[in-house]
Image 1 (cartoon, rainbow, N blue to C red):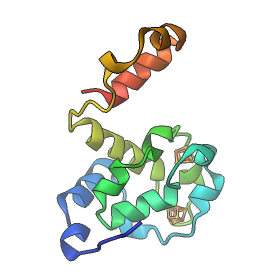
Image 2: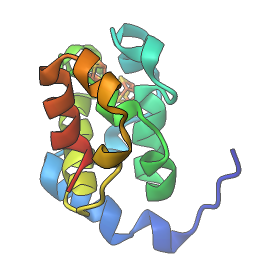
Image 3: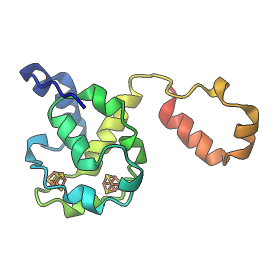
Image 4: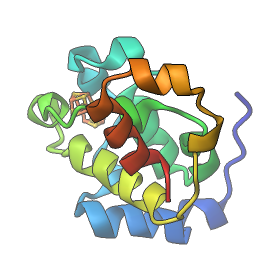
Length: 135
Ligand code: SF4
Ligand code: SF4
């Protein structure tokens, strides 16, 4: 992954918004990785929780948007309990989900899902997915 860092990104509205919504201080994270080591959902994530907070610190919103990690986070608070710096990463994950959903973008095209798939999938999973991934 090629990362472009700039002062503009470090102080972007995106970074400020994540701090505002989560109530967390992003620079507190010093990338020890304890959150990721204990995360029960890390096996399914394409980016680890400590990588997500690093991307937020750097203002790399697009890289976070291209990752599925925030949707795999189960809000179990394990990372928050383990963090030696007192960072509540679950609140940051929730802030990222809120910011994404407020963009009102359809990430799933319901009409493109074949009827036989819809008939087979658990309805609660479909409703939950549509709540998160459609405007
Ligand atoms: S445990 Fe805390 S300080 Fe360590 S990487 Fe995770 S958020 Fe950062
Ligand atoms: S709250 Fe999310 S990121 Fe933190 S340990 Fe649980 S599943 Fe992983």
